Every structure is written in structure tokens, then in C-alpha cells.
Image 1 (cartoon, rainbow, N blue to C red):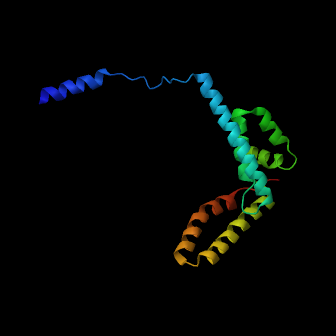
Image 2: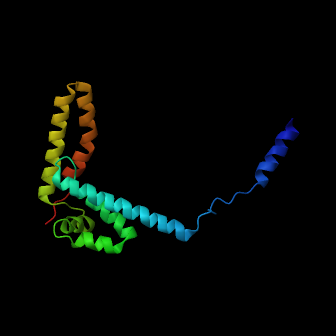
Image 3: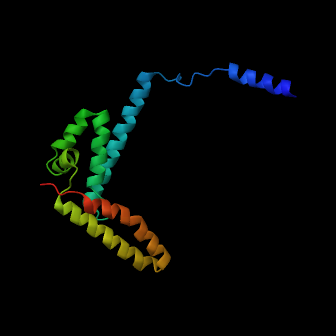
Length: 150
């Protein structure tokens, strides 16, 4: 019985698999990565535009995500985003100083508080309301502690 186990162990150690070799070439991998980053960036810009219209979606967060995607995939799109009169300064301030405008901060915090109040009203359950408060407290503290841009 021991002989079979040792033979099996020898067989498994003799098999070498090269994990780093992939059937897809590196140039195709990078093209797919660039395409996915571009699509994600465009999707985030679309969500940011919706966020500028709808009060429940944040605008700044999606623009920052889009800028990060474009920075790795399309410098031309990143420059277009940074050159935008409305959104460019917000993205620039975040990238350089990790700060947001006072108005954006107030709107974000107010939206969070109103969302919790609305959820409490709609849920009418103390346990579910406590869960909503527990889930929102981290992002609320994060946004509240962010410095204001000049």
C-alpha cells in the first residue's frame, strides 16, 4: 500500500505545468485590457452624466473612476475628460490634492442623510434601518473627512 502512495507522489511531482504560458499572446491580452478599460471608462462617464441629472447617483466618484480607467488605456480620452469645463477641475483637484469642492461635499453628505431617512420611512423596521445606517456610516465618515478644494 505504501508503495502505491509513493509511486503516485512521484508521478504528481514529475508533472510540470507552466502556468505563466497562456494560449493568448501578450499583444492580444493588452488589447483586450485596453478595450475593457475604455468601455469601463465610458460607462463611468455615462453614469456620471446621469448622476449630474439624478440626485441619487454621485457624479464625482464616477468621473474619478473614468479618469483612472482612461489614464491606463487612452490618454486622449483622459485629456478630453480633464479639459471639460464642468468636470475637469473636480477630477484635477482629486488627482492632485485628494480634495472635493465644498458644494459636492455638502450634496453628498445631504444625499446620504436623506437616503437614510427615506429608507427608514419606507422600511418601517428598526433592524433594517439600523442595517442601512451601519452601511452608510463608513462612506459618510470618509466623505466628511475629505479636505475641501480651493
